[in-house]
Amino acid sequence: MTTIRLEEPGRFASLDSPPPAAPQPGEALVRVRRIGVCGTDLHAFSGNQPFFSYPRVLGHELGVEVLAVGAGVSRVKPGDRCSVEPYINCRKCVACRRGKTNCCADLRVLGVHVDGGMCEQLVVPARKLHPSATLSLDQLALVETLGIGCHAVERARLEPGEFALVIGAGPIGLAVMQFAAERGARVIALDVNAARLEFCRRHLGVPHAIDGAKDAALDTLRRLTLGDLPTSVFDATGSPGSMMEAFNFPAPGGQIVFVGLFQGDVTFNDPNFHRRELTLMGSRNAQSADFARIIGLIEAGRIDTTPWITHRAPLAGAASRFPEWARPETGVIKAMVEV
Ligand SMILES: [Zn+2]
Ligand SMILES: [Zn+2]
Image (cartoon, rainbow, N blue to C red; front, side, top):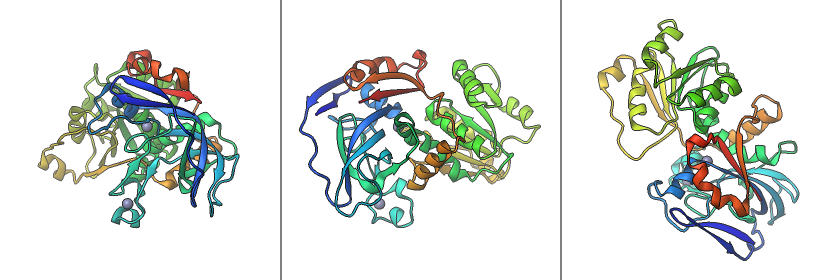
């Protein structure tokens, strides 16, 4: 079978590799059909993903079809179409024992820490497959991206009617906006890219979009919230400057959720934090229950996936498209590889 492997930053190789062995008890052999490409993949390609080790088969946003299952697997059967939860957890550590499988002490993410799905066939733990009888393969591959936003919104326990500011209108920020709106929050988008803000307004129905390049964000937030400021602030930029500025935006008693990340220190003024009794949370990956919830919401028509996919390529042509997909000015929201 064909496997596309990232050999080193900037260079993919197409390998003719043997297909995986038969699935063991608890495992499933799947045919990969769709691979979503995201920031993690593009950073690994560009060589600015810290601690990334090469060579690596990328691909963690997968829409697959089950070919065979190992002994004891009843969750899925051959022919089922599934989304893959790519977070392989140890099931023993304190986080796993408490159900926080997304931040397992020994977490291995497919396509990041271990080889992923840029290939034709793959063996995965059957417990990490989330089937749907009605979702398209494209939609199944989008579930992981949506999961990052869904989990962040679950962390925040948003209440209907509250103002939720989402900083950063890239794919992760867009996912946060969709789930925050689904929870009934009044969403305010903040970005410095006018085209992305226009996308939020037109395709996601976000009522308020602030262009941080032109407008004073704090003043505009005060005006939009009639002086209150938003009670929940999500930062999906991964930019240290933005994350540190985010401490100025929540209302007293409010909360900040860091969805994006960077390799470095976040500092903040303690009186500014304490006076308003802020809550600061990290949000990492997503949990099994988030996958099931998202599939249910898409099936019910409450999450619309039509705006997401802007670029496509077949597996054989995907490698040569990475330089283009890594440039934001090409308007890429989500590139999808078809296998
Ligand atoms: Zn991703
Ligand atoms: Zn664990």
